[in-house]
Image (cartoon, rainbow, N blue to C red; front, side):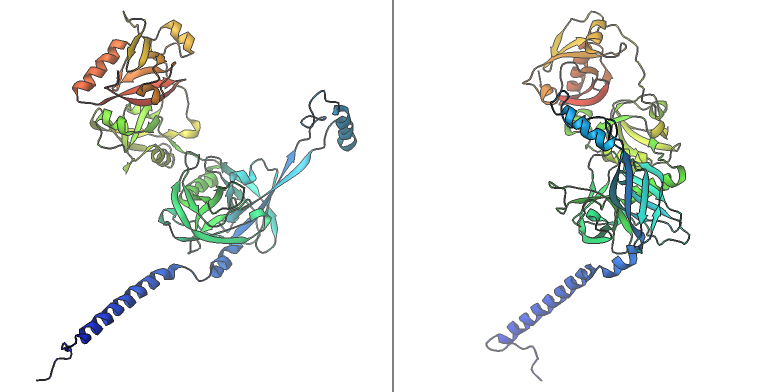
Length: 492
């Protein structure tokens, strides 16, 4: 019988050698897997740049700036130099008036159809008298403005070309992942058709707008890149370069592109209507905080708290202040920002199912959406209610409260039909002060029930304690704007 090939030698070296061979094999397998996964990093962006360049454009705008009369803005009125500057202006621009001048600006854009539709930023063309488009091949064409959406800083232009133009298409920005390669192209600092590359640094960034959904990238974006495209590696536009974060005005690797899934919907509406048509739910909302969730007995802070329901679609559907919207048209609602976006992207006039949590129970309302751009902003006046035999003032949870009287309404400058409890003073050492309550605020609800007197408030507090609550939810109005505040019940 032959000895086995893997027999152990006396010094034990053969098994050790096999162990290292096995380890090396495993290392090679892992290395090859890592190399395979790294192959998505392009060796060069030249092929992509060559393919998409004909669809990227430079935009030049010109605006007439009116002249000023006399030395205004140059020297103070009555200055001994006033006569000198007036004479200088008269010699150079007529009798005391400067001649109107032309102001130019540069930006970027990209063609999205062969018949000449071009996307750019609203701030690139805002106020422009003339818009000129320069194409990669070297020819220029005048453009007309189709429509704008200042909320997303998007504008749609149109040129009339004799031949079909080369164009690019929108990709799915939701498919972009942090770490994916991207390429920006545009007209930075007047250096036309420049390319920069980087990765997706972050997703779903919000800057200041209601409908913000920005892709953050470290691809170099500078002034003049505004309105230009951000491409994925398939040559699809996944963002419109809009803004940078910089202390000096230049790129420091923090740029923002409006996501294509937002831009695409805006462009479709501008093309069809020349304006946007966003859905309108007709409520005022705020995020649910931890203490609000505890006061309402909610399992989490997900959803959007309804703080007011003016006349409109939601009022007609029976929605109430204090409802927490948890689902809209079959989509779960995580917070107010998400709700605003999905409502705005929903068709005007569509009847949608809205699921709310009301006093611990779930209800489904059918709301027919209005149009935000046409929504009336008026709020119905509520009927006055007599305060009864309430004391002039009372202190509750660090608040000095008084039932609203006609004298207080006049003093606070609120609607003559306003009702509730007026906050006349706040103890600065209390939670109420820390959470922003101030003299002049009006408390209209406590524990999601109307309060017209201090005794009403005290009753709501006792009911919350009996229910095992640690805090109570107050609906507070300031200057007509409502918000919910949760105060701990152990606060005296």
